[in-house]
Image: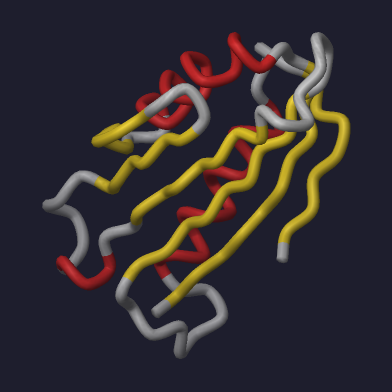
Length: 115
């Protein structure tokens, strides 16, 4: 199973991040299947890649450390594909979504690190 993680610290209030993050995921071509105030799950729309390569994105917004100006979130992007190649489908989607979060005009990126 391919799995890539990233954490972000963003300059945005907690209550504004979730709706903007849902919008961003939809703009990236993902279908948001479940969300709460601090969790979002989205998946790649079937049709372009084999079923085992479909990507699932999970975002956890850390409301326990959120302030009026900063919010941390963790993102996990995964699929059932074995990561036999460095530039596999899951990695490509991870890079694309990570870049979209970093470049989003709705917030200021304070910190980002991938694990």
